Length: 521
Image 1 (cartoon, rainbow, N blue to C red):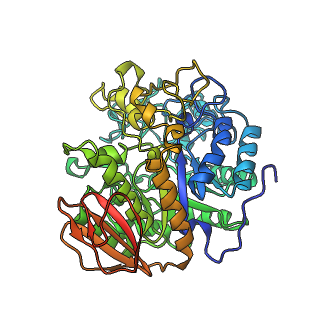
Image 2 (image 1 turned 90 degrees about the horizontal axis):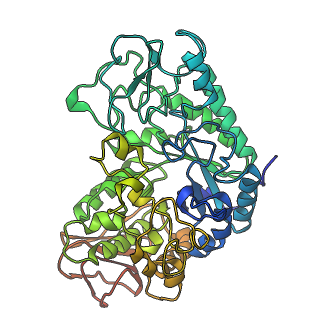
Image 3 (image 1 turned 30 degrees about the horizontal axis):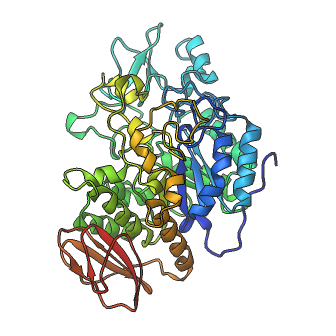
């Protein structure tokens, strides 16, 4: 084994079933090299902070060699580290330190597409139409694009090469889609999985996991059916499940409960459940929870549908692709504190639910979306390909503020400008500043995660709904009662033995708006 041994525990329940996983967007977490971009040594230096936060695992976004046309999700070499982020030795040292601190490590795998700089795609461009090299990707003949498919990043999903053929890219032109009907692609990714498993990683997050296969006839999509969803010629083709059955066999052949979670966008919980059958992925992201508005009715619908259909459910509020949830929840409110208050209450609610939870870096600091980035600073291809009409995802990717009163706020060495500018207002949100404040968002997250860790072994995998007003949710899970008030008026609390924790103020028998509380039944 080239890397560190896996982290092995002796619990009868696999670690991933109820873990709290912290997403690290590598470029924006911590910069140790002093170039304004986060890196592996930066992550390693902050691992004690994550252990103290109380998470169980970290998930790293892509750090492999890449031209960075899409922030690393355009991978040029699946078995190495980009010099921007360090070396394989840096990776091994980071994993070793994480395991010593009791933290699992999951890494991103990008199987739907590679970088156009990948050796295979360069071979395809140099080879003639119909060659084995081109068959690794989706190439087609024609005077016009083969169909009406559009890129997720805006614009057409097809680009033409000099000899007249077209290649498919569901994202940026620099991200050509693999042809998963080619057995060579299958074998390549099985080997990639083994490469990182041999280095001691505990699992994988799979990018665009419902992609990979496209309808073999590449039919047009009726305009009314366009969208990033299943039951289309682009997404969730039945053949994709055989891929994950093969991957599951590889994961199960390694010690230590190695796991895989899929980025799967679907139309329903039933569709989602197909990816987490016993011989496929261990988990899949539950984006219905992320997409739900601040509404007791919406929350209950998602909870009911998820728990009824999806084994080993997950819960997530933010990630590197969406507007940070405290900003989403605050939209439309005249109270500037509504978003942060609702964010804390939603986090507390999801932490009471059965399953695992995924946090996005900086949410424990209460970071809002940065909406006023200047156009010249933005780097997301969505912004560029839409001609500036779409803001893209840079606003949730601004580097973290660790300390100090001015940029770079401890993210980089003093005097180094981060790759995206940080707001001056973040001086009040740094980890250092919040360490000294017992009522800070950071302190709140630590309390919730510590209490959850003490309770989770004794809690059942089911919940029971308790009577509640229309704008509130109240449920029990064993001896734990969770109540959240999404309305505008104070609501009564059910009978209970003692309060455990609140996301804000409350009275012994009443819960104010935009607040959640845990009670002992």
